Image 1: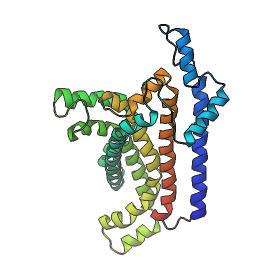
Image 2: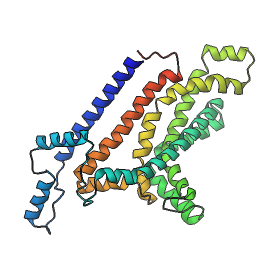
Image 3: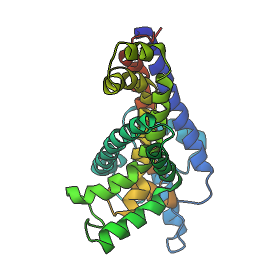
Image 4: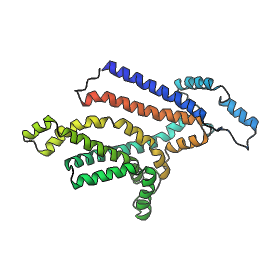
Length: 304
């Protein structure tokens, strides 16, 4: 187990290093200049470039960035004057994280429940209805379903606030919209896992012993269906975290998403690099934890 864990950690670190390197060079291939402004004298623009080290050769910039990154220095934003990138992440990420985790909890709970029900009613109307909503949830992006939900429940029915953050009522709609695609994916995956398990010999043995359908589902089918479901948790966490950009914009939530979008449009190099590495690290870390948890969930799996 230790050898496997060290190997996976090494792969994770190499992945983050590759992400950092590729993002750095691709970012500097983008056309444009973060200080380009016809109203600002050229001399001042040159001083700004020198101050941030952008007048140096690209390789020298890269090694300077790696050195600073290893010491925890993510740099200073080019557009938010005087603000350290680390402070921006610390101030706004907790909101995005809270929204993402609430959406993930909702998505896992509802998705697994729908998947179990769909499998129990295979090829009957509840199955068809749940699969219809699952496909609909995948097909409709947040930028479409978000404004519709906001208008219907916020403007027409006046049941929930249309924007803002802080109260439980303000969380319901954005969490639902953000988790909808994950609910749909979990429903389909859980249904497939449950149907695959029902053909196994131990299920037939349980039926022969006289166990009720509910006991068979809870004791055997559900437990053995969780292993494949576990593989989707890592990407799901990253999805709800990074997918919150659009949702935060629609519902005017003070999260980290708007800063990522603004950084890209204004070529704020330090902020783009830091947020890309930050979210990439979350994805890699979650996948690493899922790999290590396989042996805990299913003892039959040997982690050599």
